[in-house]
Amino acid sequence: MKKIKAALFDLDGVVFDTEPQYTVFWGAQCREFHPEHPGLEYEIKGQTLDQIYDAWFSGELKEKQTMITERLNAYEASMNYLYIAGFEAFIDNLRKQGVKTAVVTSSNQQKMESVYRQHPEFKKLFDAILTSEDFDYSKPHPDCYLKAAARFGAHPKECVVFEDSFNGLKAGRAAGMRVVGLATTNDAEAIRPLCDEVIKDYIK
Image (cartoon, rainbow, N blue to C red; front, side, top):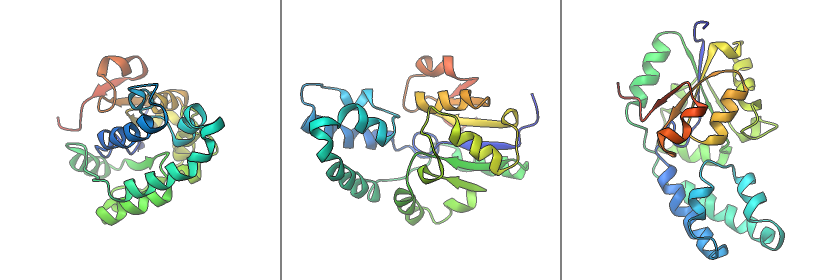
């Protein structure tokens, strides 16, 4: 394996321990619009907003998408963005070794502004921050990770992806990169087939 030149991180469940908060939000929406499907909020974990809308809020519910998006934007603005245990020290160590770092997230710029307000230091942790506005295709398509590698002039084999969701893990694999799975959103055994390594946090 070539020397690692770039470490590429998803955001939710990888940098920040936010997935439990999203479960609360989507639990409320699912109980309101899909009471016939209890537990739906757990089934849609790790999916992009477009994927959730296409699968569960299309047809007669399509007119509700704007309202739900407004609710989500307001919710994200007040969320607690707490780093996964050990993350700050881990990324600091990577950068001291000359490894380029990037966030590669399906989140939009509006949400990132909420992150920056809580964490003024956030941008300094990364050499690049790529959001949904930068990609043509959503995960599990590898587009986002290939674009991040290209940003650094790195070959896919010189990159390592840190992901928690099935779609994200598949995207990293499809990009031909080494994949480290975080067992923060899904059980370790469930994600292991899609990973080269599974960790629960960044504490050694």
